[in-house]
Amino acid sequence: MKVTREVKTGILAICAIALLIFGYSFLKGKNLLENDRTFYALYKNVEGLIPSSPVTINGLVVGQVVSIDFADTSGKLVVTFNVDRDFTFSKNSEAKVYGGGLIGGKSLAIVPKYEKGLEAKDGDTLPGRIEAGLLELVNDKLTPLQAKLEAAITDADTLLTSVNGILNIDNKNNLNSIFKDLSVSVQNFKEASGAMNTLLSGNKDKLNNTMVNLDNMSSNLSKVSDSLAQLNVAKLGTELEGVLVNFDKISKDLAAGKGTAGKLLKDDQLYDNLEQTSKQLELLLQDLRLNPKRYVHISVFGKKNTPYEKPTDSIN
Picture 1 (cartoon, helix red, strand yellow):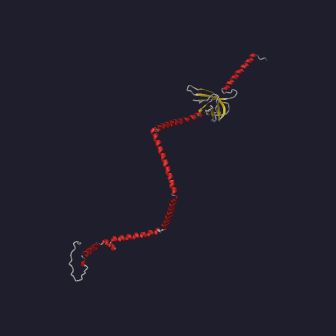
Picture 2 (cartoon, rainbow, N blue to C red):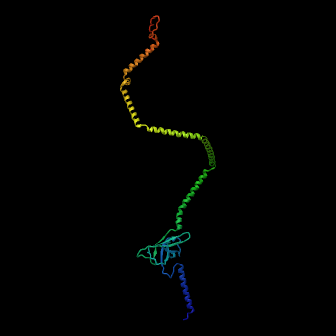
Picture 3 (tube, rainbow, N blue to C red):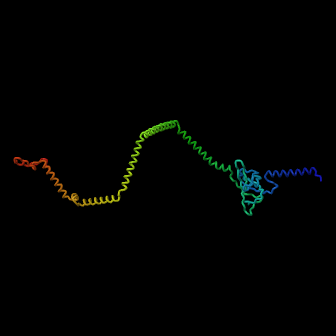
């Protein structure tokens, strides 16, 4: 059977169309030769997810994103993706958008759930979820840090402004004067320290003798302390207590008028008699001083006694 040119042309055209359809589907991420399952997921924001992004389950690539389109007029996005593995999971499994590093783009991961009787089928819509990527996490961390850094810079600027206000010409001159005085003080202290070292070096022997004397004094004090420690404190206390008891008894006897000393303190008549005796003795001594001739007679020729003359300064 002879194949005409028209038939050959038609066959070539059909093959070209089929190859075009296959290649277009392959470029969109759908292999017509494989039995893929197509799923959908809704998102408010796909965070940079693009068609042909890989779809993974537990890190294993099982498909790719086919298309991303608007779902409705509210701006929600529907992501169409296929799964070329016969791995079974429930329709409640999440379709999570994750990734977004400095170089790599976003990916879609299926977080599988295993619920018997709710197996996901071709055309089902899975619940979508967005996981913050590296850039989002860095941005979240840097945002408060940026605010703190700005506040710190503002405080530093305010501090520098205040310092510049303090360090005016007059204050700078005062600071220079303070540092000069401090330098002079340090120099004086250095000289005093040198003089002290010289003094200590010159009196080293005397200081050594002083320390030896102090050591001997400490030893003597230690011996005195040991001697005091050896005293019979209990016996000494008992004897002292007896002395106090006797003293208390004597004071009570004196207060009661017992004994000679007690009578002297308590007997008024005895006191008056002693006072009169003392008065008379005083008069006698005065008369003896003023009229010694009355008591001493020296007469060689038997002269008569001179009559008594009362002294002008006699005591009444």
